[in-house]
Amino acid sequence: MAESQESLVLHIIESLQKVDLETTDIDPLLSYLYTAKSSLSEYLRELETFISLNSPSNKQRQSAGYLLEKIVLLSFSGLKGYTCVKSFQSAGPQHDLLISGDTIAWKTLCETLGFGNCCDCILIESKAIKAKVGDNQFARLCNVIDINLTQVGVGIFFTLNGASGFPEVDSPRQRKIGDARLRQALFFAKTRKPIIVFDKIDILNLGKNGSLPKIIKRKIRDIQELSGLPCALLEICTEVDLPPHLRDLIT
Image (cartoon, rainbow, N blue to C red; front, side, top):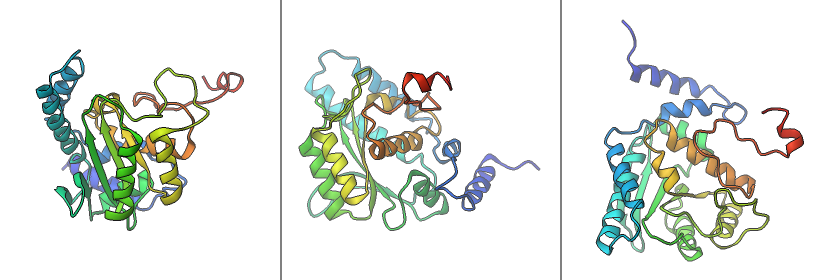
């Protein structure tokens, strides 16, 4: 009798425990660690409709806030192995979504993305605002992770228009950093905990299996490199950032 797809996935996850994640490229296997929920596509279409509006009303903006929170929940509940998902207000701040797990699959996911051990939680903050996330908002999330929720391994802003100081698509390479981008770099240098930013382009790609962990991994690598360029789009399998006399050798 043929094995079920779920059984095959479990075999793959168990095999990953024998792989040296530090030296082996297992990026294709991230597809098995995130399965986009079928209901997510409907909410992504609603978000795309909202984004296309020229002058949304206050009511529409409020609805977009709730919509983005639903997309966050549906997206992250598509990750394999999570056992705990929460949205609550602690003694101080409100936490939009805190997700963690106690399974082999979750441990594999965290190790593959480059964090784990005692800090195996993901904290997500949803911002359906017109402006970019600024330095003060970035500083607040840094403070929450550094003081309130020390078990968090990676923080994520879910936004429509990204954060201040980050490279724009088709813009020249940045040779200096400032605003929220500088805050991101300093916090990572201090704690080795990445805080990454999803924008509308990233979010609209979450209907594809494997997309969420792949985007997270690329954005974490971007903090480590600070290349000055925006992260590559999901469809691009191989990232090439070389001067012309070298680029021609592999393209």
